[in-house]
Amino acid sequence: MAARFGPEYFVLVVNAACKSRDLAHLQDRLGDQLDISMDTGKSLLALQGPDSAAVMERLGQRVSDMGFMHCRNMAFEGISCRVSRSGYTGEDGFEISVDHALAGKLADLVFEDERVMWIGLGARDSLRLEAGLNLYGHEMSETTTPVEAGLLWAISRSRRPGGDRGGGFPGSGRIFEQISQAAKSALVGLVPKGRAPVRNGTVIENVDGTPVGHVTSGGFSPSLEHPICLAQIDTAHSAAGTALNAIVRNRRIPATVTALPFVEHRYYRLRPPGNHAA
Amino acid sequence: MRPDPLSFTDKHRKHKTMKTRYTDDHEWASHEDGDIVTIGITDYAQGQLGDIVYVELPDIGREVEKGEDVAVIESVKAAGEVKSPVGGVVEAVNEELDERPELINESAEEAGWVCRIRCTSNDDFDSLMDADQYRSLVDSLS
Image 1 (cartoon, each protein chain N blue to C red):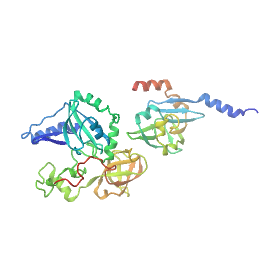
Image 2 (cartoon, one colour):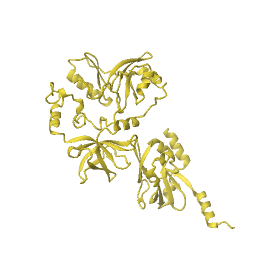
Image 3 (cartoon, rainbow over the protein chains, first blue to last red):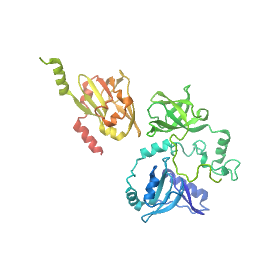
Image 4 (cartoon, rainbow over the protein chains, first blue to last red):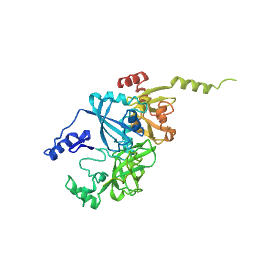
């Protein structure tokens, strides 16, 4: 995630497992134009869910003018924080970056509201899966393109083929080829029949018994009360409604390709989608 | 009227011989009568798995070795194999788990039993941990 806090001041939150490689890459490509440093002194608290804005208001923060993915500096009873209206649950929410030494004090303050509870990574993972959001190491790796990972939305029109500043970024050759000729495989949603969770790594076959892909993340959706999966499937079989089979412990479980997300996102937007200036 | 001597003896014997043993994999096995052993996972194991959403039960009549996977219990978090504490033949399965897998969360060591096995030998059962040994194992994990 990248935020711009000044004309030439950017703050990135990167995947913890990739931070050293990301920093080296930034230094390599931009080190002569920008001062780049890693801030290892911050903790991140994620306050997520439909009531999160009301909790922020009770803590004295005005957030009604803060849209999804907006960032700003805030102070909670003198504790300075950098806050973004974001998260990885598909729900409205806030991610609060704070000095390690003050994180406990801030958590205590937030927990004074009886609506706030801790959740574990298992709950976070089922929420992100319901929201159809990618996880590094599952839906994406260093060799996955944004087209294959369903992340084409992250490349603005001006950087795409024919755009004002089209191309010229790492991987743009392969990405442009996939935009014009369609990638070999695509990331799709799958809903298996029955209640057995179909997990990461499961082979997916077409109805003739030919392997056509694999599950990248799978589990049981507590909101929908049935299993759901993200899967990388050959483009010829990736249309919504396609009937496929998941091979679980040598048994075939029917599974249908489904549009993403499984559960609608409930991000807080200041303007209706489509009304943004280009 | 004289009580039926047979049913009295059966009840008495069942009460006298019913015992429960445990594996270090957190299964329980209850020797009820004759060579039938009922198996399931312990309350500690269900707590570790979290919300259970699906149980894959074995086919009746299937032969299993001691330690072989006999069922799979899937929770929101993970899949856990149930290793049979005894060798034998699957005699019955808890079909209620098809509709209500959460029975294992609610009552792992009673209503949430998984299957009944007709043992080939009593030695398998006799070599399992007793309740005190299992309790010390769980205490050492927390």
